[in-house]
Length: 193
Image 1: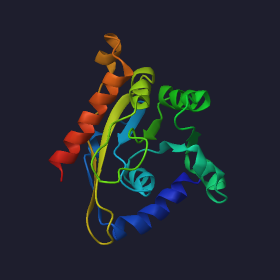
Image 2 (image 1 turned 135 degrees about the vertical axis):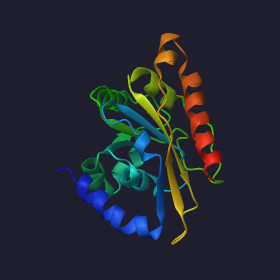
Image 3 (image 1 turned 30 degrees about the horizontal axis):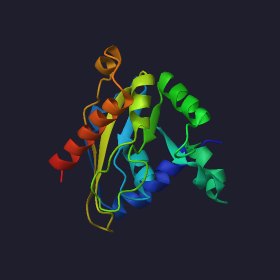
Image 4 (image 1 turned 180 degrees about the vertical axis):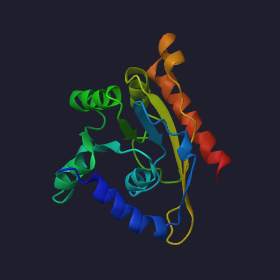
């Protein structure tokens, strides 16, 4: 049973007023193609916040450990999340993400691989570049500008989509593609603080 619409409605009702969420650039979001949505990661609430502000349903890659928690293991698959083994080449997660992108869905990921303790953008893992190059999708950079403090403004900024076709044509490395994605996120963070 897909609980995504219900989850989005609940998160919107609770989180949007609590954190006074301001969304910038939602009009930049492509509406008719696969999208790899890449965001910085500053808090455990990032996935629901991105999910409630994105104009399309987002399928999040989530660390496998979350799917072993008693409540989360039954909820996460029903809100479009799928597990990924961190630090390994997880073929099942790779196939799932590529299939979603190729069928015009939105796949959400946090290229840093873990939350930033300082709030500063960390180095992106090459998985983001891999999916950007292989997924035949547009890349949507996103910046979450916090911190998460009740009744203080939290910004979610969507930048212009990155067309990966030139990178694919010149057979760019996953590392180069990841660097381009991270640079776009960094630019959003700097321009919208």
